[in-house]
Structure formats: structure tokens, C-alpha cells
Length: 298
Image (cartoon, rainbow, N blue to C red):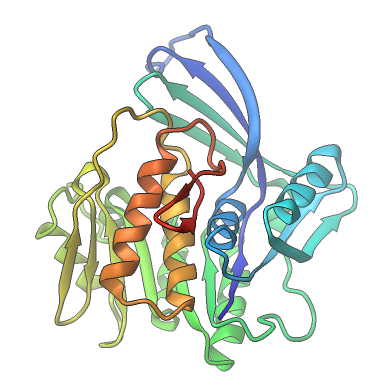
């Protein structure tokens, strides 16, 4: 049992404000800080903290941020042998405006992530599950899943951010994870799904009868949708929402790790929801809180 994650590695720059700015509005930040981020890195750390062996394929620049982030991944149990350091490139960066209500605006500068290439040889290293997102080039993600499927791995795509070209990936994956906004985008719908029953519309994205879609609905929990089944897991109630930035990444990483471990879907969804609930009670995309006997990011 092991996981291979292909994805982005960023340094996140946070600006805390009382309320998110309106169009054309200038606000003074109450505080600023930096933290490790990138959907790929966040999800790899989430998977590794469950105790499941996790390898990451990614790229950073040959700058100070790249060295720090690569070391940080390694210190959190992620195998970084396939995290490339690209000469004369900047490391990816994200600029996050975070309100006191825990809401955010995020702008991402891909930098080295846009130049990610697959390593030579056995990309998967016999990992049972392959996980990718869409902050790296779609053609690289497609090649990654082709390698993974050829070696019998389960292919999981977190289709975020929702880019139109990602539709070409859907036929080759086993599990699709989207939030309610991403689902609406891929369905070309003006209305965002908000209820578990409405999430059944994700079936329209399934190409094969054995595929599964998982839709996260924020405070309404998460829904697993298959051709002949629908499982709804309510959200975990928390006392205070501090930062929602990494909740979806935490959810995806834990799901992938538990899938590698052979858990049942009801169990997987419950634990992933609990992990995401812990995540939103802390600043930054990752931290180090354990829950329910399994180490997860919070």
C-alpha cells in the first residue's frame, strides 16, 4: 500500500483582512505570513500523515523557497526523490487573502509547476494509488495516469482548478473529486449544487460504469456518486472556522491514502471529513494535529 502524488508545490503568501475586498477596493491587512502550499504538496503531506508511504512528483525552482519547501515535504514523511529542482526558475507561489470568517481569495503563480516533467523509468514505484490535480500541465497529468493505469494503480483526479481541458482526463480515471463550484463548471451550469440529491448530477461526468465521483459540499458534507449508488456523509460541526484554504486538499490526500489502505468507502469518507474539519480550525493549508488514531493534517 502506497500513494504517488503528482502536483504543484507553492509558497503561500497570506494576507489577513477583516472582510474580503470588493472589486476596486483597497484594504489594509491585519497580519501577513507565509506557509507551505500547492495542491499537490498539501495532498501529499495529508496522505503521508496517515502513515501510508507517499511519494511526490513535482518541481520547485532553484531559489530559497524551493529548497525550504522540498525539505519541508521530506520532514513530513513525503519521499521527495522525484521532486525536481529546476535551474533559473522560481518556485510556485500563491497569494491568499483570508478574512476573519475563514473565506478566501487565491491567486496562483505556477512558475516551476508549469515546467513539471515526469521522471524517467518506473514513475509509480509500485504505488497502489495515483493522485493528481490541475495546477500542473494537463498533458503531464494525462501521461502520469497512463503510466499508473498500465501498472494497475487506482487513478484519482482532484479536478481543481476546473479547467476545460481536464475533460480529456475523465475517461482514464477511477475516482473524480470536485467541489460544488467545480462540478457546476464541468456541467456548464449556472447554478451551484448545494444538496446531496443535487450532487447526483455528477453522474453526467462519469464515462465508465465502474467510476466514482465525490462531490464536496462545504457545510453540507460530501457525497459519493456512482452509477447505482449515492453515499452522503454530513459535515463535521466545528466550533470556529479559521481558514478553509487547505480543507479540500486535506480531504483528497486522506481519501487517497485510505483507498490505498483498502478501507471501505463509508469509512474513508467519514475520516476524510473529520480531517478536513480539523484543517479549517487552523491557519495555513497544513499543520500537525492527529485525530481518531490516524495522523492527519489539521
